[in-house]
Image 1 (cartoon, rainbow, N blue to C red):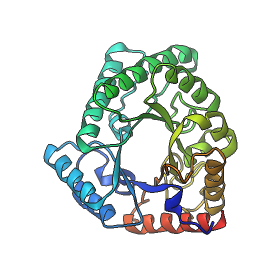
Image 2 (image 1 turned 45 degrees about the horizontal axis):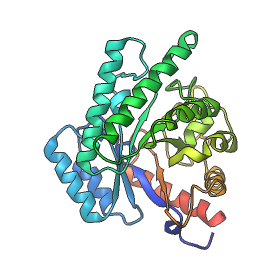
Image 3 (image 1 turned 90 degrees about the vertical axis):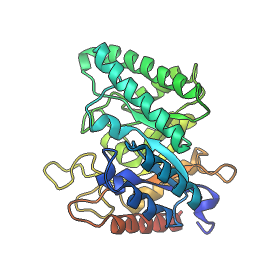
Image 4 (image 1 turned 90 degrees about the horizontal axis):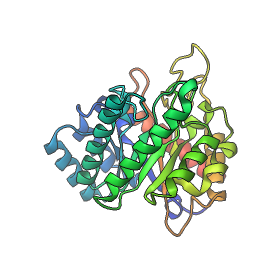
Length: 302
């Protein structure tokens, strides 16, 4: 592809994954934000909960000064606390919902242009009840967000039997879920993640085409599936990591399919973000540089 990426997409990065010391809402949040604000490769920064109100103010000012778009990922609020918004225990589900509503408040405070969450674990024998509980919870989140503004609420599609074991889930179930949600909530959509597609045991085309009309955010990421290998699971290691599944060829195919479905376009370029995480003592900025080189090569192959 000879034309510039920015003509068709806005490149972002999941900041709390690239700098995992910030994942619990504390730590070097200012330093991690500053690193991305300085880097004009990126148009979008994805942040998560920030417990300190003064730090939230500083992050918003930094991002606005740098001219970045900010989005909010609530996944760490859930994953680091064991919360589940399709929990069949009403008290636990309410606690999870309350946490996500607090996240929506934070997202608006930060000026976020999108709010992402994930579904929770489930048992096969009670899948229908968990699905219905998720519908109710997601509806409440959409209503809560809509009452405050026009920020989209996005469900990220995760694996259902490998690592996170979330109910949503394989592409057909994701399509069934979003069809029900979109009947009532125009601010709802789906987030797709290249590494999760491998973990769902689907091809990129099998995963994307059924949900194509509802894709509103995309992540480029890597995964290791080999049992016993380093970084196996939903760990988002750098590209070229030993035994990993995603490389330049897969990123190229992912981008090509996003073009095919009209997600990548020159009228309103959408967000495509890296989600990469240092393994062991790897330097976060080296891992980010690796991701940029991978995307550059994939784009050149289109």
